[in-house]
Image 1 (cartoon, rainbow, N blue to C red):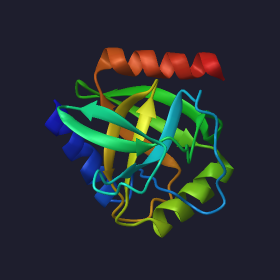
Image 2: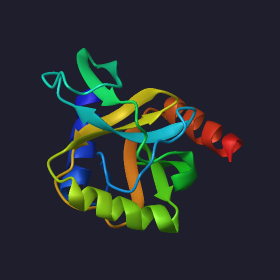
Image 3: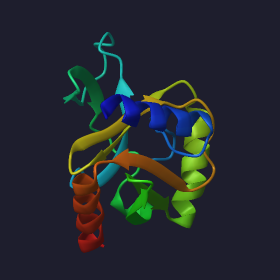
Image 4: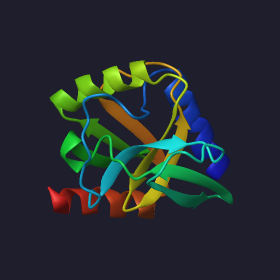
Length: 156
């Protein structure tokens, strides 16, 4: 299922239908208590970057900046959907965040980002195209999707 998650996320990114993230001008530090967040993934070889946290994702260690580029306040809703027995979460940005995210992805093509929920990496990928649509779609297991969508709703 992990390979399927990565492939679906990569496909969605390459079609510019999904999401991505990286350091962007105009964004200050955000609260680290955010349930859903998008942050930049950094290279393990760049030792000059401070403020990173290592996450183990399917046996691969990735380093994610502690700075939050998009947080709970940037999402209007998070909903679980089912299609032909597969489950996915839709993350809908607010109107303002949709514009910022489109600009953010355009300015950071080639950069890596991670989408986290409850401090767990749901997906990490490379930005290949600007994403102007205001929604991200992430494949998940049903139980994980139910937990994330209900937890997000309870925080709003």
